[in-house]
Image (cartoon, rainbow, N blue to C red; front, side, top):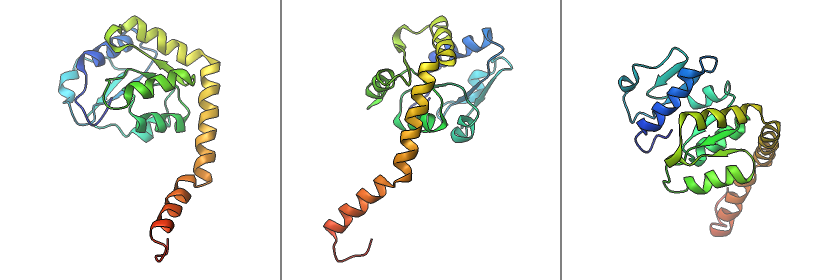
Length: 170
């Protein structure tokens, strides 16, 4: 749940409680180096708490992602083909990102101030079982791949550089 701000321990404990009840689910928590794992020494066997989680490697094996709503995590999650449960910390663009996830049917935006273990469990169950959300994520993933394959961003930067520095090769 972020590498720029400290972990929200109260939210993480609520999430761990969900997985304590749902021993058939597994959870990897990456603390982003902002909080010591020793504060989570009472987690069940199906929960792994790491100072730093290898996010891209974990995403290859995930069914759902719980995130704070940072755009990098959102993009990486969509590229991996998983739906999102966004619990925004309201930093920078996270509320807007959460709203867009909800709007495009790529996941659920949860009100962090009213979140409970039961709500998280229900949201996760929805994300695991809703074929429409999974289809939306798959379509967005295809758009990402198409955009990337056409090198749209690279071409745009090169065009801007040519206009501003026509005498230099790009």
